[in-house]
Image (tube, rainbow over all chains, first blue to last red; front, side):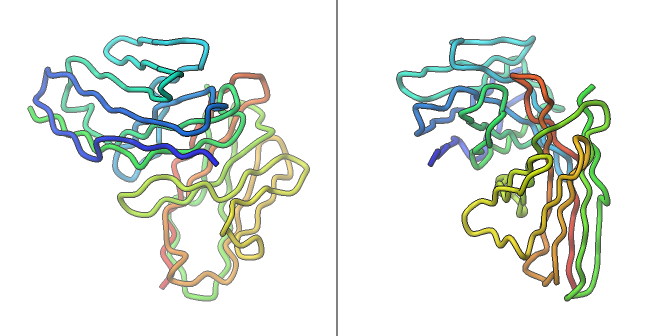
Length: 114
Length: 116
């Protein structure tokens, strides 16, 4: 089955700096890769996603890149703010739009220091 | 749009009690809902995939008779933890996906279950 590895497990940056979180996946049939942000005790919220026919996607300060050949994808957050502090999860799925089950990475706790 | 409501948000009950958790898609219809379990500071582990009108598909190691799932309509799925014990204490989260293709999963607020 699919296995998703996520690094680093914790990341601390200064406000205004960039943060990068990386994930690798094992199933070459996976074609949908969402990123979720989860604040303590709250629901995971979809922040950005990418499908396998796209190499990069950007939404304001957030971007995701995908390398299908190497089977890895990354989340980039620029100009970080304290409210970006949370746990971020990457995931992979065979179904477009997450129609099939999502396999999650172990998460990255991001702390943005003011 | 794409709001998923989960109820209750917090349950504390005695060992041996059965607990039912509801997951509702409020503004869209969902043929598929997913149930996850999350331990403190850990990732989301899929328990089962719930399809409207059919039996749920359970992940390996998840007891079907322990965690009963019912998906009776396009907007409601329920998870019943039967004869709960302290080791069942956890954060349970559902997600739902819309009918149309290429729809992402949207998560409920989760239910924190504490078994005494």
